[in-house]
Image (tube, rainbow, N blue to C red; front, top):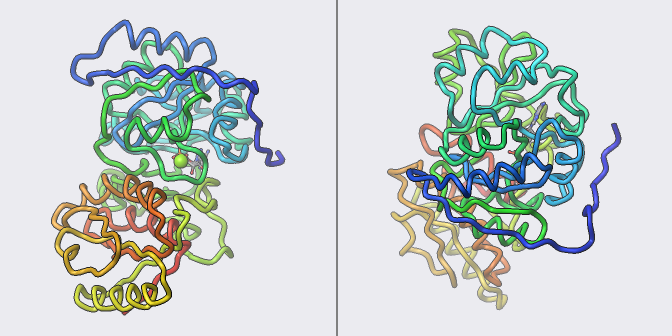
Length: 363
Ligand code: AMP
Ligand code: MG
């Protein structure tokens, strides 16, 4: 299948309805209205525990095309199918590997996506022409309620314009997709803030195609076997192609140059301040992405605090919001500390490295 970028379906912009939803007290009328839109082939953005998703009927080729068009997403980058019941996996999978049951038992509903062989009922638009399909059961009550109300399986990539940081609150979805989709369900900020872990179950050994909140160690413990990590996502060069098509695209990059400085705390602060001073001498505006512990030590024009190093979940939660804020500054150079935190550091750094185009200074 050749890669195309679908153009907007109709040139006229549509009114995007915004509905506030209380996750603990979901308004039935709103969820049913949103469910009807999905069932009618329209697009609805909704909160999940990872990031906001842009949902459409997964079994409807036109709905899938609308998703690619609204995001400006290349058509070879498949969508994740969201389900609300494990039994629904049979509606999309040709066969279920034994590991799927174990992983679902341990992590579903939750931030884990499984790749399995697809059956013929899944349109190739949804899977970007691949013979496999990505499936996830989200944990967010609004996401689960929407899937059930629509009576559909919901294909949903992150609800951002392709290439921009994923949305972690409804205002981010508005920024990118207002006028292009039917509705946004607003349930406030998401909990995790980075996309789901993707595990491929179609090969000899299970393999992580995208790191996330569910770590390799957690997966290995449940599966009782070794889990590989796709070498294509670790390399900074382009020689090895990642297995998840989406991982090959440059992502999240702010308009300004972003450089990561890695090393011991004092060395990083010293190096960044030295770089900041040099840019200031050239008359350039600078910004720094810092931790709570170090933020007061920087001499940059703007210091964006991502959170305390003692709470890596908060760092993940704030990452995309901070990258979006970078775009609102008119800074020309942004320096970021490295956030190789103990548990989900590989997932955080995977996104930050992409945003920086893998530019790292080690001190
Ligand atoms: P997003 O929903 O924005 O997080 O994007 C979904 C991610 O899942 C992208 O990186 C896709 O390339 C990846 N993905 C979806 N389906 C498959 C599949 N069948 N095989 C490999 N990767 C997939
Ligand atoms: Mg995405």
